[in-house]
Image: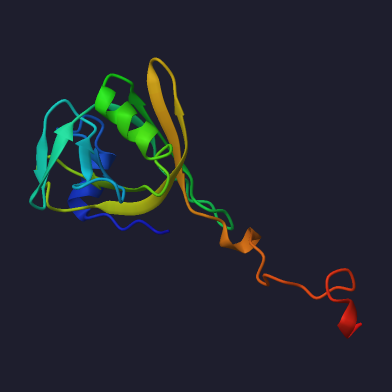
Length: 158
């Protein structure tokens, strides 16, 4: 998962006292949601590619980039909204949700520097925080053959 950044973004990352920091925007999709939930990890709202992202501080660990391993990320949001908790309860813990995580700069919000879409699972709720893991289903650990013929289940062919 190589990341190709623009030269302006690389320059900003390399500066010791950069005038601005990269912003992480999230778009949460679920079949029960009429419109996706769009938030930005900032205190101010921002419009990117025609969509409004509401400023909500959250903690996000970006996916790792290790060879021979599925990328995983972690997302935590303060439990300050009853609407979010209601949605988690009615959607069976957010089952079937996808989260698109992107990095942008406030000065160039329509330029997406990096983006990834992952599944949301293992949602945990406490009085203070709602957290979940982001990742992919490991297709290599699933059985390739649904039924195997063995003497125990198909004695007629042995």
